[in-house]
Structure formats: structure tokens, C-alpha cells
Image (tube, rainbow, N blue to C red; front, side, top):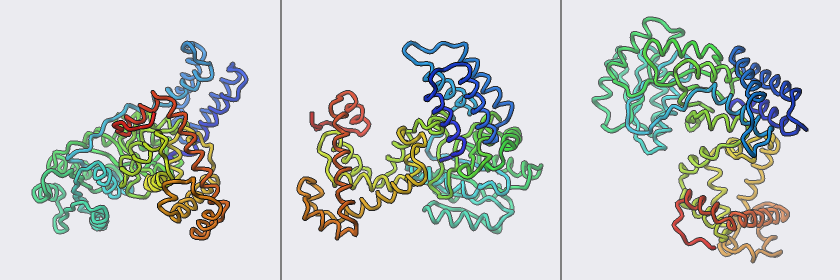
Length: 446
């Protein structure tokens, strides 16, 4: 997960509150110290950290919890709200044909981010054209061309032209209409007059709908100063913060950029081209504190190549018609939604760090074994688990290369899944909400 060390420390704070026999001054002081330590270790600005914890202490001592809320729950809510407040406002981003200009210094991940942004738009149904306007680094043009081919995006470059603005004008004339245009520009080792003037000329030629600055999270707190400088020079609509998954300084970069006046729009959370996430502070803090992020999970579900089968499996689950075939569809869907650890971090029951690395690895290994077993079932067995008795279990184990114990474990897990659905089925209001999310039109068992 992004900022895993910070998230783990903050989740430890929440667990300390939950374990405390009473919420008193001693516990509050300990909680404040732990939050300060966690923030400072994540490179968050000292002054910002002190202001945050002062607000937590003041609100916890002066405000009264709402009727029906415990002091523990109220303190957790205060911590959530104050961390959320330092990360700025939600900045909407509409996936549609538009012109986007990317700016940034050398080594910030700008060219890769151009392809990631193109891939993000493609998954939303938008056709994209990538334009190589870095006239100072031929390798950047070659890299962007390769990435464009990889994701199936349109591409334009002119290696003989040394004026970036001329390349942009030619691209607009030659690329098909109704595309989202993403322009990759040149970087420098630092912000200088030549860089700014070139960016201004490119911006005039493109007439962008949005200008995004690409920043490496490893810059830490200095990322905020860079964002301010670019914002003042060319005007920014947002910042894309890259390499946040592996940066110990990510907390500093995140908090510094958020208060710079240039809102964070996307986070680069890994090396793969699919690993670009919309930054929405409310959802980000929920995941950071282990409260899950069901909305992101639903969005990943929307991107599944076999969404219809996954929807059908979910409908069968809440209607009591769940089969092993449906279970296989769900495992397929889980595999398409990304690394198992990232998917688990989106779920409230697992987001609080309850599964360590070894447990996650064991769970992923078991899922692979389950998938092999399901592939060894006959159509009749996939439709009706009740017919799978001892003789069939031995045959399935041999066919899948697994033990009979693993086959029985899968059948047990299947029954537990079916039984867990009974609570949903009996709760008609909850069931209607889920059916509405799935687009159900009726036909479920009462």
C-alpha cells in the first residue's frame, strides 16, 4: 500500500485507542506523541505536524461527542478529519477528449506518467494520442513511442523538428479529431528561464484544457516548493505525484504539495502502466487508517474484462443460487483487479493491517490452489457442489495436482461463503442496495 509505514503507525494509534480502558489525558497525550512520531518519520513538515496534533488535542478536550457516539469513536473521527484536512480539497478530473500538457524536471517520471495517464483514459473509454514534445532528449521520444505501441495509443513525433511548439501544432493537425491529447515536454535539472519560456510557447500552441506537473515523491518536502514555482510560472491545474509506493519521503511530498496551491490529481503507485490512481483525500485517508476504500474496489470492478460474469456471480450469491462456477468467476475477477495485497487494502475488514506479508502470501498461494481445483471440476460439479463426495474428491485432487485436504478446504470455504450470504438475503434493505449497485432488475429469491 502507498505510504505503508505511515499507515501502519497510524493504525497502531487507532488500535491503542481501541484497547485503552478509558480515554483520559494520559491516553490523549500518548496518542498525540504517536501521531507526531508517525508524521515526522514520514517526512511531514514539523510545523504542519505540530498544528495537526494541537488541533486533535484541542478538539478532543473541548468538543463533545455526538449523541450515541463513544469517546473512542469520537477521537478516531477527529484524527481522521484532521489528517484529511491537510491533504487539500478533492480536485475533479473528467475522462473525456481533452488536451493535457505535462510539465516537470528531469527524472520525475514524466514520460512514463504520460503513458499511464493515457492508459487511465483508455480504461474510461477515451481514445488517446501521445505527443513527444521533448526536443532535448531523443531517448524520451523513443520511450514514449514504445509505450504508445504497448497500450495501443496514437502517437506523434517529429525528430527533425527542434521547436516543441511546432511539434504540438503539427500533432493537432495530423492526429484524428476527438482524441484526448497528452503532451510530454522537456525537463531540466532545475527550474530556469529557458524551461519556463519553452513551456509557455508549448502551452500557447496547445491551448490545453489542463496543465499537470509531474513530481517524484522522493523529493519530499521540496516537492511543495517545486509545485509553487511551476504554478506561479505557467499556472497548474494539478499535480501528479509519482513513485509514491516506494518513497520514505512520500508523506512530506504529499502534504507539501497539498498546501502549495496546486491540487494533487493523481498518484503513481507502482511501475506498471495501470498503476495510476485518482487522488481523492477522503478515500486516501480511509485506506491509510485501515478503513478500506470500497469505491475504488467498485471502480476496479467496472474495468473487468468479464464484468458480466462477475456481476452474475454476485447476484447469485445474494439470491442463494451461488455455485462453484460462480466462485470460479469471482476468483478470475479478483486476479484481474491487481495484486492481491492492494485489493485487500481496499476492504475495511483487511485494511487495518490485519494481514501481514506472510499471511498475504499464504492467502494468494491458497487462491492459486483453489483455482487449479476449480479447473478440474466437471460442468455438473460446478453447478452442484452437493454431488462431490469422496470418490469425486480423490479424482479432483489427482486432476488438479492438489491434496484431498485442499479439495475439502475449498468445499468448506464455498459453504462458508454461501452461509455468509444468508445475512444479506435476510436483510432486505441491504440486499436491495447491493442489487441496485449491481444493476439487478429482479428475479432474486425472497
